Amino acid sequence: MNGGDARYLRGRLLALLLLAVLSLGLSTEARAQAQVSCSVSAVGVNFGIYNPLSAAPTLANGQVSATCSLIGRGAARVNVTSSYSTGSSGSYAMRTLRSGTNALNYNLYFDAAFTQIRGDGTGGSQTGSASFTLNSRTPVQSTTSVIYGRIPAGQDVVPGNYSDTIVVTIIY
Figure 1 (spheres, rainbow, N blue to C red):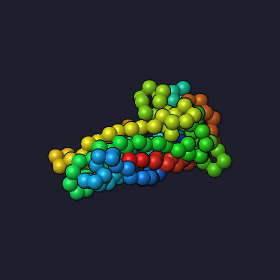
Figure 2: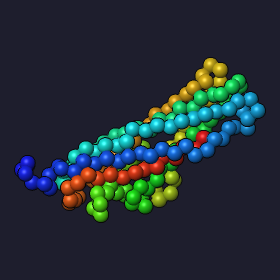
Figure 3: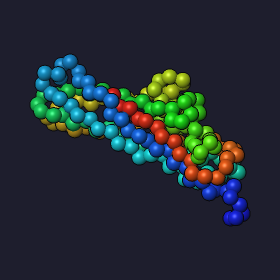
Figure 4: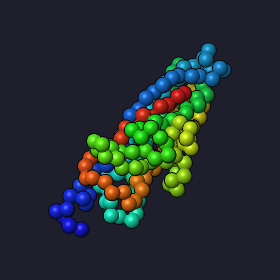
């Protein structure tokens, strides 16, 4: 590797997760007694430096977490569904990190085998889900999911800072 050659490893790649809490829904048996508040947080997938000459894909992980809290008395069953936007690519088949007009293909997955694409349930993608029963004994519950990121090997790209913004929508 020639340290002076700009084609090697100068671009830093970062996929950012932008969070959006969309709506509040309670099970019918809980409406009269309890209210629920949920929040979401994420750690973005940072791919680091991509080497276009490497025969191996570039892998990185992030995470997304949802925490739900019972407000008041009673109990509530909460179903949380997460969906993920396509980002700048407009497609779940392959997302793109961008540096100006230059693009680098990547995707985000639910599994370490890279078979379940994080999305909205369309275009071969899947949504995530979790369920909680909140009551006086367990008034707060959380779930955390690993986001598996993968950039396929062999992409000849211009050096630069590549990024994408994914909107994570949580419905509960």
